[in-house]
Image 1 (cartoon, rainbow, N blue to C red):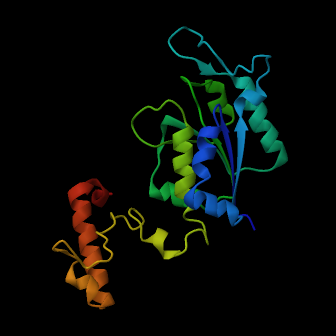
Image 2: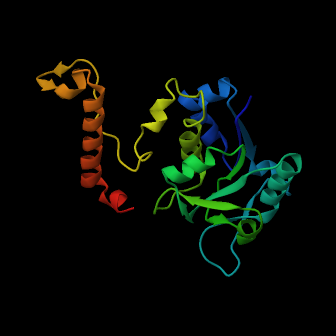
Image 3: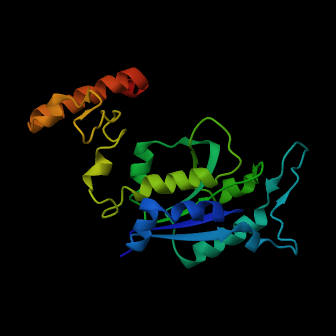
Length: 228
């Protein structure tokens, strides 16, 4: 049974669709754990030229995505099923972190609106959007990359997607720390040796080492995480 459905609305949905056709995201779809539906805003335009943007009132640079195509698309989707969230990607939004990803991974139906150009008409945000998310304090050309990032981070948490379900739980940020150093064969490569504790088979000592390493790594690279 499908656990999650994503409806992705974009002016250039192919940019997201191509990314999701590879690796874990594609595997999850083939396993029928997730469903991806892509909606091209140009298909909902109310003019012969399929134009979805216009100049901003009051002047200023850039073009704004108009209300009509977005309202038409989202209202059509909402008439067919209930959605847990309608998400828009914006620098104004709450910062994407593991806690938010964990929360969203428990939902069933999400609409993701990827803005483009200068942005979207404020009336869309005031009326249709239930949650705004930012992936960082910088500006991108559109919301397609943030949408792909959000989907990827959620899908890997869903049951039966990863071969080892424990893998996602051991990732950085899940326990408030960065992930400790990781190693694989050979144990000695050009004189660079794997820490002996990882080879001794003592699981208690290994877990203690991993925790200590994760703590030191977090102190060094992301000390603000420990304050939180």
